[in-house]
Length: 157
Image (tube, rainbow, N blue to C red; front, side, top):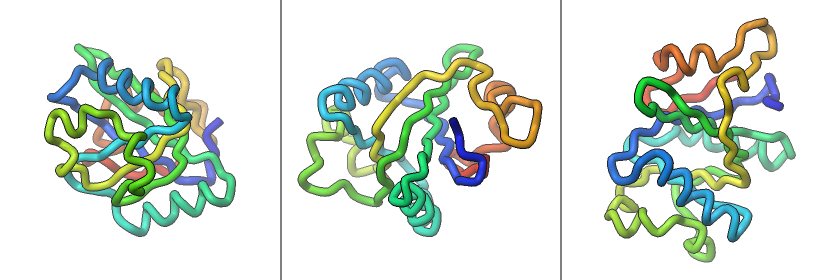
């Protein structure tokens, strides 16, 4: 359940290196093996203020989510991921939690910030109820992204 009093991160990704399925599968492989995985955000990063707020929520025990959204054909597909930590760098002892394609495709140096995930679950349309409305946030996800982006933004759900 999404806590309506907390912030959550929405990241739309368009992957020119792998298909959306492959990107998710590669992260899921690491997650299943190690119970955690780091996902990198290319380009503009999330501001320090928001990284700090999200990390404080996590340390207080509040479930904080990253919603990964990808257009596949004419449809949008979303995954809800439980955030364990956000950082501008990955600790040296956690390098094994980064899927190998970041290095293999030479994109690691383009990563501006990292999110450590503890779960990664595909969300069906209708899976984003809002706290104060009878509407479903997924309707907005699947119709229009201008409410949530440029490419990474925070939503108070």
